[in-house]
Length: 188
Image (cartoon, rainbow, N blue to C red):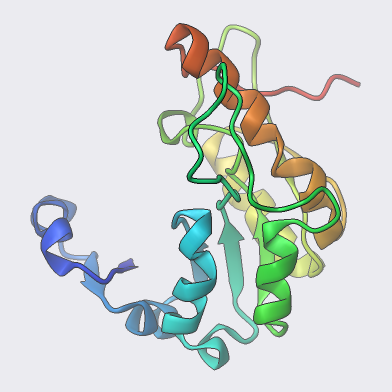
């Protein structure tokens, strides 16, 4: 595993604890290193991270897009503001920027503490994914199965228009009651 960063100093403590299989490098070095890339920057700098990674380095690679277009404007009564519209998601913009990369929207509506082995009273939660490449979505489904999630494939990249705003809904209980241990479940 290699983490790409602009500030190596911020990750020195993490690297010391991570073990021999972990390393840090530039975004470009991480993009060249990884078979599956996790894009987990602030949404406002996600495009810049792709540029720093080298667009050609992303060609054919699966990119787990965890980003959300959260505005710098503070939440109002627990409700986040986005800098995108309902007619184009951040993931769609990123896919246009790196058209030969295989983006899969995932982990954008849950906190990091629940991403692996979520233990919730209501049972196994649903992770909503979308993307244009079926083989990349299959890779991500296998990861989600290992991590303890039910995968719900919502289709192509345009479905990110619906998935990204789930972050707004997920954050409301956190802001209002300081409770961040919840997830969504699609009942059938």
